[in-house]
Image 1 (cartoon, one colour):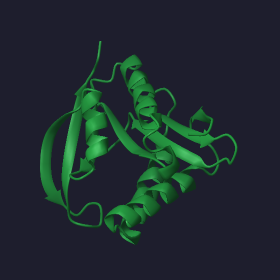
Image 2 (cartoon, helix red, strand yellow):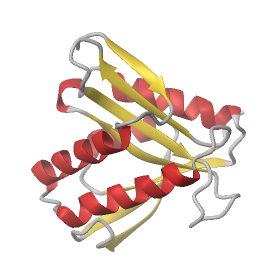
Image 3 (tube, one colour):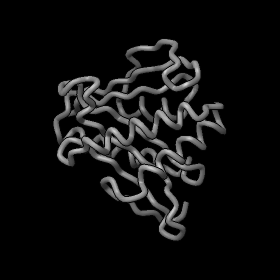
Image 4 (cartoon, helix red, strand yellow):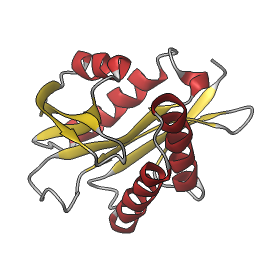
Length: 170
């Protein structure tokens, strides 16, 4: 992989690039359509509106030569849907085709979890779906455990949604 830089925080243009990266990947690999793209855009915009730096973090990695987005990850420490004691919600974690298999995803995950641990979040949790085996392996190697699984159309397509938790590390 080419040289990259990691930026902390929400920067102009980042939201659109996160939506684009997700929409293109999940359309190509899973047949997800406009419903999914709109959901990512709505959820990300709502997060940006309530983002507070002391409890939330977004990391993005950029190709230094081309300026292309290589990957992102967010810890949403204030997701109002789940309440203030629910811990950190790991969201919008993805790497580009260019960055897959380079270790960038693991690096982003480690940095995001270090933030959650430093903030003493009681746990970090995420939702995903069955079939994303490389991501599941990465989550489990970082201490996440599958806590529930059920069929759902939240993503715009019927999938077996999975919830993973990782308790606070001391």
